[in-house]
Length: 293
Image (cartoon, rainbow, N blue to C red):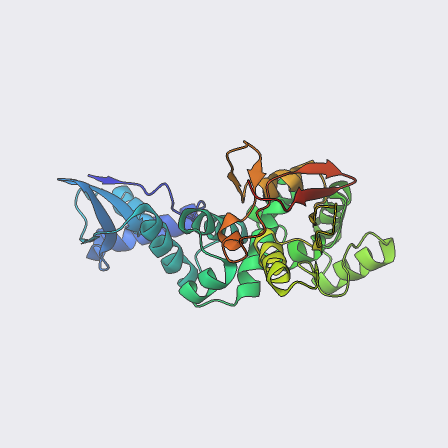
């Protein structure tokens, strides 16, 4: 028996395409083996090849060729992602969710994941930012009514209601990406500043500035850092658009002993004087103290 992979990044399978593949398989069989891992004797979990498996089932086959590998959950997810990305089978949101899952499972930085996948770091960071868009906008992307290019432009708009309004306008009027940029500029809703969406206003301490830069890339948002002074704690200010965006940011962290969100602890071991443990929301920003637990 072959079980489906819960880490499969691809969620949408075109029905017509599946029917065509099923007809081909019915005629000549499955030419490329499915990649699986052994869960227990006689039971396998799919790593790559779900489209072929679905088509084989539709064609009435009860057996398919497989290649079994010994791998972990994270390894299985990574291999499924790599196959789908290199075959260009993933939609923009599926790709973004897969990147995010890999970051959480393997505790890699954006740079490390980019190296592992042979991708540009900015490509991965910008892809993950799509998950911050409102659900209605994400649905337009999933339905292929809104391109990833349009979506990335909409991320420059701070207000989620405005993002939804502009997305609807893009679909209704058939705006190009360039026309969408112009519409945002003329409306004055852009939050884009010099330095891009992951800019850092860092303190003079190089170690602290490095951590701030890593966090900015990891969270795909702007951060500002102020160093501790005599009698005052240092602060890391993380920008978010609204509560939903804050929840997205919080999902990238882990929980410390205090029960509060401790963000991107993997970076903090490099500068042991700073462990970010306290969070409160003030005027659309998160303020995180710099004391150690």
